[in-house]
Length: 338
Image 1 (tube, rainbow, N blue to C red):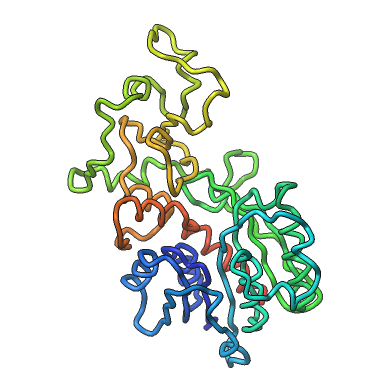
Image 2 (image 1 turned 135 degrees about the horizontal axis):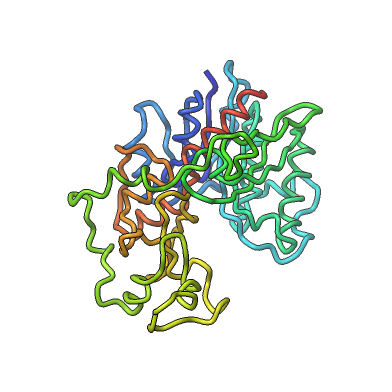
């Protein structure tokens, strides 16, 4: 069995995916106390969970194991002030610099020397303002002897009921990079793949009264009437196009696109946010905010998965997670090419 070390584990979305892909997570690292406790209450007995700053941890003990070992994780991507920070020098990059979590991931790779790694981050890592960080990461990993494949994934294309784009970097030793993963789902029937998964059937089990949360109510709120008028699958901009609507409208482009966004049961959700504002979607088509259990289901966490912390903390953990089903597909692809 492939062993797995998880860094920046959060609530464990990528870890659940790795387990489903047949890997055994032997160590998880997470700085946030609530998220680390979430990992503990859902973990198997013999996993090592470090609730610690990764800068203070060592990974050399994972070298030269009899089994294949992979390293996975999605470090926070903080902006870098200048390209010069990413010099092509392994020793510079693996310094214990708390500002640079990408280099801490690479330091762990350098110390553990795994059979392969899977790095996950936000789509904006490919933006011109952050491109130097992406290119520096790849250049340094390749100096370490790992060939890299950079892949932009939409979670909906892998069976997740959510349109969520993330960058993955697959690293394997040797002279050849692995191919891109193949999509399993599509919105276009011409692709002859499975159709995207609508959110309706995924969150239906959590519509019962026992899952009620007081935070879901919008009664008397600032934009309650506007939300009531937004059609499923649309956002605030739909208000200006409605026949017979006499309420408040908003200038198109004057708000973020997820303002008053309402789910359509037959379509994937938009991205579940970690810290949404009070009128940031997705909202339920029944004119309420999503319950934590519904958000977790959209992120494809198991139904019996438990989260520790306040409602705000749980929302943050769920929103920051890699969708488990997407994580499974990516880890499975890595393991198949070790």
